[in-house]
Amino acid sequence: MQFQLPSALQQELLAYDPKLKALVKEQAPKKAGAKPKFPLGNIPCLIPLHIVREDVQKDAIAEINASAAPDRFHRFTKVINVASADARVVTVAILCHYEQCWYAAWLPGKDDDDYIYGYAHAFKDTATTAKVIDRQIWLNREHYKQHEMGRNSVIYSKAFLVTKDDIVNGNDKRNWRPYGLASYPQKGLNISEMINEFERRLQETIPCWNDTRSMFDRMKCKSIWDTLDVPRDVFSSVPDKSKFELSVENFIKLSYSGRYNPGYFTHTTYSVGYKIKDIITKPVIRKRLQSCLDRAVATYNDPENEYQKHIRYGYKEFEKTMDAIYTVHTIWPDCPIDYYNNYYEELRTLQVEHLLRYLRNDAQVIQWLREYMPVASFFNLLRKYKESFVSQARYHRLSSYSDYDYPTHTLHELADTFSMIGRLLENGKTVEPPKRWRMPDFHDYVQAEAWKIQNPNTKLHQDLFPEPVKVTVDDETWTFLQPMDTHQLSAWGQAVRNCVGSSSQYADNIKKRKHFIVLCMIAGKPTFTIQMDVSMGVMNVKQIAGVSNQRLSQEEQDKYSDAFKQALQQREKQLVSA
Image 1 (cartoon, one colour):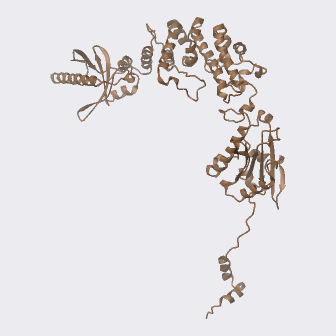
Image 2: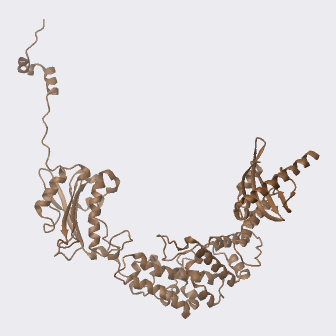
Image 3: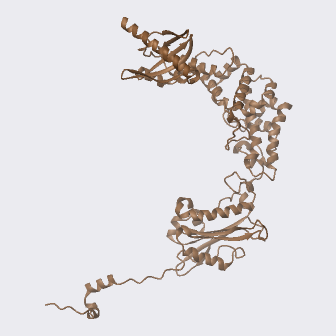
């Protein structure tokens, strides 16, 4: 027998009915707990009150506590130049909360002239904070003020005033930027934009270079040497580098000390001055080199200059020209002084100094050049390279990454030639000097010889033309042939100045019968290189190139087509009659 109790009686007897009691408890609406007003902490005011009033700061703290993570920041502003047309709103202080830590930063007031900027941190003393906060901040918390903020709640805070001396002595960190801000772009984007506004305003109040990563680089600059790209150990023999004046004579003394000797490959300027002192102390050369150094000093002392790179321009030109002179002197120690003066523009604009890298400090190559390449021929080559660069439209384009304020050019072809001469001499080969020093002809000859060292001579298939086939077109004799071996292919590549002779891919594919390489001479002169394959009984020309990879004109294509058809007909007759 069962009796259904009315609802009121059920509630009255709930204590006797544990199952119903549990169900009622589960279904009962839960009372919302009181949300804390300051979940991130009711921190003390971090910014000096004469910069931002106390009530304004407290409102900002409450606002940040009530905001979602991406919006936990506040920018304090003021209007400057109120009475002029240049009136604008600028940021004077910032406050934000990110990953368990509060960050504040501000600019000095009009009566504060003893510091550059101020910043402050505040954070709770919790295990969570210890895991995510900047490690240095957490480890230094014992130096912070402690604030009792409710039961079992401690907040650490500390403000710092950063002076010019602090920055000069190495305190150039952006202490107002939250640790790990860039790790979560969506969370930190708005905070980053606010901080960028503050940084732009800070840079307006201090001297800055417009082309350095740190806004404090100019403030840290004690002498011109802090702006130049000079290895640290260069001045190991100089008691006070700030008193080291930029002069040709001082660089000679510096290099004579022998403390810095990196060899051929880097920064030879600091080690070779005394080796070329007889050249660089000649009045005409010294005057030009000293003018480079004087330009660097003048730019450094120019209060209107806002770019560190502009100071380096004159110095880099001096450094480069010194290294170029040393390169020539290393190869031709008896080079007449007049050459350095007459070809000064080539030395300062062409990367002559890079040639030593390709010589690999190789005495054999240097000796070969001294014996077979007159220094006059070398300088003539430099002038021809210079003229070829000037004639190109891109000559006047200056990369923003350049160390110089004028175009410079690498001597790839000449450097490659020197390097390959070294390879040939190293393998006991004889390198015949040219009758006239002309590039790229000599480069192609050396390249072909160097290629032979790395690629042993092997036979190639001559299935199409076992013997040269000659035909006549417009009273001209056309000769078609296939290279008999890889070295003949290399010689052909040298003759027509294309890569067919130096690329192992072409020879490998001939061996595998993937394609034919057919060589064509007109009136006994190498003229065309043809690459062909066969598909379904059809021979296809994949590419055909003239000397230096030039494309054929329509007239040349018509003549070639006529000549090659005749050559195939002759080959057909040979096969039928065999």
